[in-house]
Length: 79
Ligand SMILES: [Zn+2]
Image (tube, rainbow, N blue to C red; front, side, top):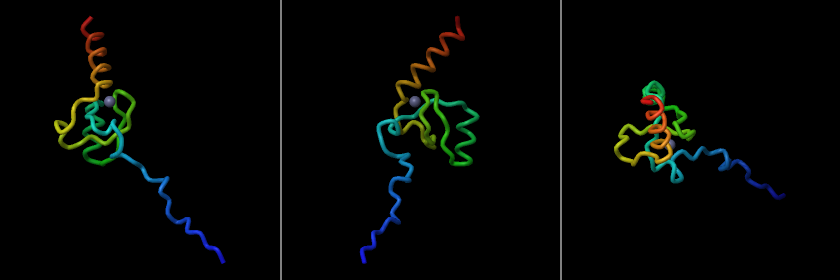
């Protein structure tokens, strides 16, 4: 009898705290961030990254891509 244990579903784990992207604070719609702090659900940032906003956004530097997109948007609004 050769029983293989396949109950460990490691691949289904959602790695929200791994990788460089999670070392940043991202920009997102304020309403989404507010909702996420209540529900704890991940939201889509300006750069397309799905992440859970930290309660202390100052802990991480701003995501360069989000910053770029945010400044582009701001420049458009001012022109
Ligand atoms: Zn970002």
